[in-house]
Length: 222
Image (cartoon, rainbow, N blue to C red; front, side, top):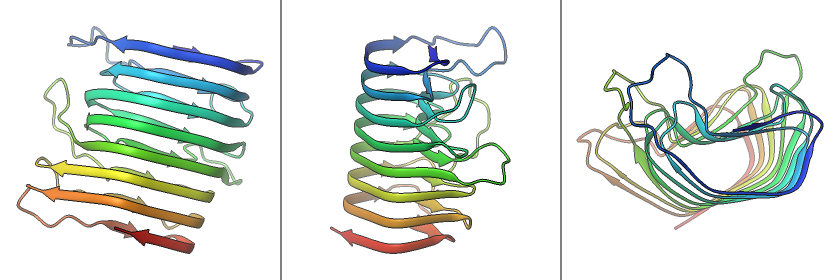
């Protein structure tokens, strides 16, 4: 399900289950719900199932370009899915986004902030709040080898004004990848991490924060 074009406003997308039963008939992504810019004032809730791409993507610059703002996400439930949520900005702003109540296992990574496309400009993320996350690494549904990535990835040339992650809990038995990865071209003005737990059952050390970028203000508690 993809929205693209002249803009979407005042919308509700809810109660969708992706009932992958495999194997895929064609080697294609099998996307979930993708919203392209411009897009504002909406609710996305209760997405379930397995997809071979982002279960939910907020793409400000993909098949169409424009800001994505004032969107509330509530309820993502997935088992061995590629990713829960991608937020993408090549230059258009993504801001005033809340993502809550995410559960399951993901064979790439649950969350990604990226620019994705090669461009001289920088991705622009405003105020993003993520809370109530209970996730861990998953296996590829077709049993193929998969390295996996950190659970929260911030990559490419992007700026984030404010990012808060609260009540994130990881019970990990599969892969000892970091919880958070911040790339060297990432600039975060304010990052707040709170109420986070990790149960490591892999037998190898797990890095909490793998950071090469710039964080102006970091607040972490509990």
